[in-house]
Length: 272
Image (cartoon, helix red, strand yellow):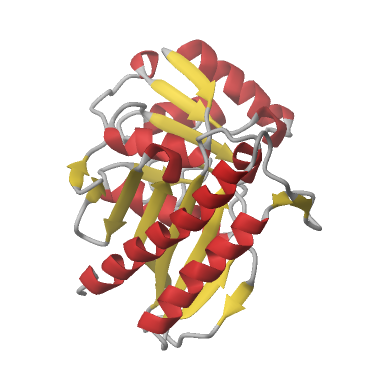
């Protein structure tokens, strides 16, 4: 499968969206104005405009592809291919002018056996000028340089990031996080797009995400991690599904140890 043109257009689309996002970011004196959506999450004019730019670019280049975005929903239907767009992942960071937000873009394919597979993903951090991208079978790259996950193989030497404490809502996960904090070398809450870039570069060794959100929040994460040599699973060690309530992304080497800490059982059946 030749993904070169899809990736070229996808990268072009997120760079076009960057111009829109940074226009709003720099125009704000202190906070970027936002509204509250029905799910109580914030949305800004930059979210809506950036998604429109991305969707328009993709639809013009690939009229037979569908586009599903966080802000505008489904725009066009594709029989085989559909793009998933999160124009600003981390809108709360964006509204406070903190640089850890990112644009997520992925392309999924409906196979002949009715299974969905992610064929490429992009995680772009506009304020850091860093673009992480991967396509199926071709590895993961950061600003055109190929990257790989770390070779750390013991939890007591591992750096682990995790989702916001507010998302860790049940006592089992809270207790698991406490155990991870005690047994790992370092554990801290970091923004997801930033964490995934660090993981794929080998600068941290795992990321635990609870309440991972919707389709557009996970596709780019899964393929960039696995193409960088890592592993991506639910907290039972099974392949991640869109219905999964959480995921563990890691360098693969510490994955069984982290799953044991979380669940008390060893497993390694996640996507790798």
